[in-house]
Structure formats: C-alpha cells, structure tokens
Image (cartoon, rainbow, N blue to C red; front, top):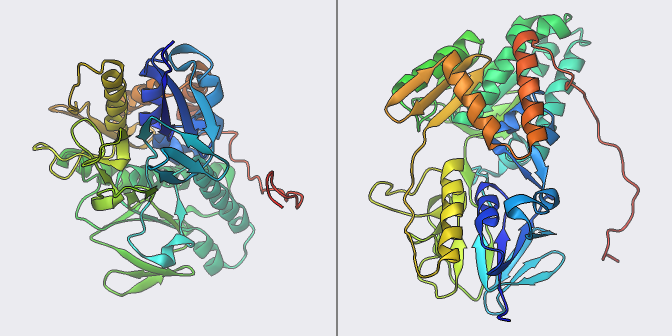
Length: 428
C-alpha cells in the first residue's frame, strides 16, 4: 500500500479545526499541535471576563472532537512550537520533534503592544480563556474589596477601569462593565455607590468599530454612553507606570485596571533553513493558495497569520473568524483534489458586535441592523459556531437566564491554590 503523507497542523483555532475536519484521512495522516488541549471560541472571551459564561461553555477538548464525526482520525499532540526545521522537515516543540510532509500553520494571533515594554506585564488581556479568567478574577476581587473599603478615594481607585482599543473586543468588554455598573451593582453590591465606578474606553482613531459602517459606529457609541461608559476617541495609551497612564499628548492620569484590546500580531515562529517574508503585524506573506511565498516546500499559512494581498484587499484580509474558516476549508479541498486547485476568494458574510443585553450592531451585505434584532442575529450566529451540543445548550440557557434576571452563578472568585514543588516530567 502507498504510504500516506503526514500533515502537521499548528494551531487548533477556526482555521486549523476546519482544515482538520475536511481533509481526507484516507489520503493523509494528520497531526494537530496546540499549546492547549482544547479548542476555544475567542469572540466570547469577553463573556468569561465579565462572568457571563463559564470557560467550559466555549471550550471543547480536541481529543473528544477527534474521536467522532468529520474530525475522527486526527491525532493531537500538546506542545508549544519552538521552531520549524525545514531541512529535516520537523516541527520542534518543548517535548518532541514531529516530522511532516505538508505543514499547515494556523496559530492565530497574540497581543500586540506596538513595541511598548511597559505594557506587557501591566495590562490585562483577552487573547485566551486563561487571560479572560485572570481578568474576571481581578474585576471580582476589586468589587469585593471596594465593598469593604471605608476610604472614598481608595474605593474609587479600585473601581476605575480603562479599556484600550475600540474594536469588537474592546466595545464588548466595555459594554459588559457598563452593564455591571448600571444593573448589577445595586443588586449584588449594595455597599458600592455606582457613581464610584469609572469606565473609560480609549480608541486611537476617530471612530469605534473601524471595520464596520458609520451607522454601526454611531450606534455602538450611543449604546456605550447609555451604559455609562466614557468613550475617548483620538486617545492613545503610550505607557503605564503602576496605575498611572501616559497618553499620546504626554498627559498622565490614573487608569486603574487596564484591559488591553488595542492590537494583535502573528506569533513569531522561527524557521530554520528557510527565509520567510513577513508583512505588517508580523503576518506571513502567502500566495492565492495560502502557500508561503517564494518557497518550494508545501508549507501553508491560514487565518490571522496569513497575509494575502489582492486587488480587493491590498493590505490583506481582515483578521476575522470567517476568513480563517473559509481558508481552512478551501485548503483541505485543494489538497484532497490535487488536480483541481482553486484560488482563495473571501466571501464576506458580515460583521457584528454586541454592546450589551439587547444592544448590538450588524453589517450584513448592504443591510445594517442595530438594537434587539441585531442582538438576536448575533446570538444565533455565535451559538451555531460553538462546538458541541452541550456547549450550545449551556450558552443559550445562560444568555436567556441573564436576559431576564441579570443574574448569574458565575461570579465566583477562585484564587489559585499553590502546587507542590515537583519537577515536571523530563526535567532534572
């Protein structure tokens, strides 16, 4: 029998999972490598951070997914990729070297601090489930301590929140904090005066949701103001010293808890034996088939890491889930039918963002929706995109319960316990 080629997929996000589901396992052996042992749903990380959903409602174990359905037969290896040895054709993690015949890189993005080291260890971020949980714990801790603090100045400082970045993630977490201030404090934290809570959203450009229509931008601004969120446009965070922020005009102010959603960049994967062209945001340049440019090896890059320039998208496609999904599906079809190659063309299915209960904006084709109807559409799209029927049901129940009651059992402040000081496997 003819030996099957081995495909190694780096990253189990939208692109990697859609590729793994649709690649023909009769033709290829497939190994997926990820630092986590679960697929997660980044558009809802902000709901973990705001105690709206529990982490396991938007995360799904790889091994369970790969034991059933279209993904059955894919092998999962946990590990963080340290480098790619293109001479040996191996992917090197901290645990092993995995040989490949075809390599698919779909590792998503990480936070971009635009070369500002003062922000790396000072701000809270929302690029993973773990980061969202850390953000949630800090918010809850501040609320609990503020409810006991007799000093009014200290109490207001504890309850100062600054969100940096006016994209969907920034608008959504700011809206969630605004709902907390407007509707939840009086019920759950009666010792806190909501006027002591300050929520500011900073955006460096002149509008929120820059990729959406002007109508959506204006509606989002109006919704945030209704939720007592102060929006500051044309405002840049240059640095952070403790809780003191330095802005673009060199003025300083007390920023409190800073949640950074202002930028993303592709992770810096090292290639040994091959030079890779990179564009803005550290993205890897690819051709119309998602193959790394000017290289003879079958190495493909998908999703947020890929920079494919076309007449319609001269600066590359937007870093959205739909782009990653469509690229993953198309690459699988192309590899399954090597005699029939199709160039990638993005089909824009619309963009949407939610600002709170019953408040959302959506651009779908030529139509622009806002308010309750857009919120219903947003809910439906996100529910259908989740893996696992259990997750879909749990999220739906949590959303409906929260809509009518503003109540949740998820505001649990769980401080991490100390682990025994043991060597990890393989260490001496």
